[in-house]
Amino acid sequence: MKLHLIGEISSVAEGLKLVMGNVNFQLSHDGHPVHVKNQNGPIRVANKNGYGEISFEKTIHFFRALGLWMEHFQDETEFDVTEEPQFEMSGVMLDASRNAVPTVPEVENLLRRMAVMGLDTLMLYTEDTYEVKEHPYFGYMRGRYTFEELKALDEYAEKLGVEMIPCIQTLGHLKEALKWNYAAAFRDTDDILLVDEPKTYEFLENCIKAATEPFKTKRIHIGMDETFQLGLGKYLQQHGYENHIDLMNRHLQEVVSITEKHGLKPMIWSDMYFPLFAEDSKYKDETGKIPEDLIAQVPDVELVYWNYYSKDQEIYEKEIKNHQLLGKTPIFAGGAWTWNGIAPNYGKAIVTTEAGIAACKKEGVKEVFVTMWGDNGAETPFATSLPILQLFAEHTYHQDVTPEQVSKRFEFCGDGHFADFMILKKLDETPGVMKDNMNTSMTSKVLLYQDVLIGLYDENICGLSLGEHYEKLVPELEKAKQNNSAWGDLFGFYEQLARVLSVKAEIGITLKDAYEKKDYEQMKSILIKLDEIQTNVDLLRQKHRKVWFAAYKPFGWEVIDIRYGGVITRIDSVKYRINEWLDGRITSLEELEEKRLRHDGPWEIVDGLVGGNVYHRIVTAGNFSL
Image (cartoon, rainbow, N blue to C red):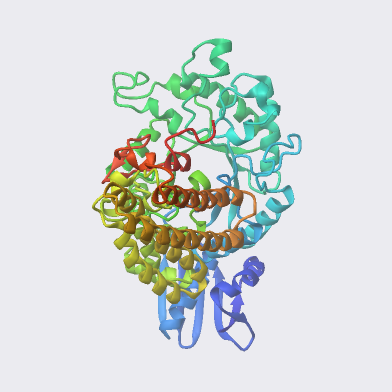
């Protein structure tokens, strides 16, 4: 469609060129006239008497408004719509540290989609995946971003009204960064820095400078979450035991002094201060307040309250109020649940988002963002997060949001059908799993990687007919692939995963049953199925590889290749063992003589399946790497 934009477009002119493909329009003097006003107040889009209007305050509001105008114009000749932003900042955190490092073009693609949705902030979570020239082993062979790449992304984002904020770690979650010998002098445990060590702060100043110099913003997220072993490694040996709150405060003050030196405004994850909030907290006085002298010891940083686990709005409200005991309203971080395993957990993502965002609106939280983690290999393509980003976006501009509203907007902003994307949750939300998969069963990951002959999870899935479940899922995903041409490769990957699991899910149970009955004909037929599984797993690997290399740098794919290769190669050995038994060269298959037990950890068992697990605990009961 041709548009003739009249009025105040100088501030958005460069961004307009970037989003033309997303919004599907061209600028032309003979196009439909739309008057653009940059003014305080809500977003307004209208079309009356053959004449359009767009009113916006911030640059990001213009791009959302442009999309809204185009969307309404497709269906109506006359309309007048206003939207009131609910938050001062609403954005995205994209994990670039768990194997998958998105390419610059793919981040630019995300930025364009965010702009049309109206999300105004992007944080790239980089533990060691940014270049620190003083430390060449920092991020070595991990796909780290160069200064030039980050600067280019920041300039691209600015044209769209998106602020890019560097997000790093300055205490824990640094296992990959600290594994090299250069870090020996300032390593407390394998993933935590050594507090009070001068070399720690020399290292951190190098990191902070490298992470922030490509960006125009003065804001920086310096992490510091989940440091449960703080002070319990080398620090303990050198100084003895010290309370972790005291260590946190002292270390944080040192890091803040570095950020102040460079004119930066830091934020941290707030979870290591949660002991202050406990009902039986020894830090509270008799009135339930945190003493002023203790509050004064907490350095001046913004606190980010992350929670994407509860569907209870009151829990979020309570925790927000707890943060306010420290004298400040927190930033809120929800989750898209892209880290469940191989498939997204949309059920949990939606119910936790609804509860968390409702609490934020009620308690006056001004800044929110949605996290897109990639735990244990980043096997779930981050593009699957887009429906949840759309949900966040709609909550950013409306007090109340309906599923129909999110679905309609996603069709325009995400080039896909919301209902079809929701089918993906069925890969993990299977028979035996509670509604919305609140206990994060990663059924598809477990069943793909678990060993056919060892069957660590076979006892958990007995009687659930999961093979039949996945068999029925294949045509659903095939239809979704046909319905979503922009996402054909993504749905093709998941269709193939369902196809693999339709046969592999219960093959171990069938194998053990045939062995115990000495059913030689059944065992021979299982050999044919194993050939089929091998072929289909390799095809799955190829489809996954295509999706990966369309979005990510190559570093990290070697891990996924090895995982797929493990499935394929182990099946080869399983066939060898079965043939040895069938041919009488061995009298028993010891793996099948073992009584099957329910999987008992290390993660919680729920709903007949496994709540969550990591690759090396799925594939063997032995030591995978030690």
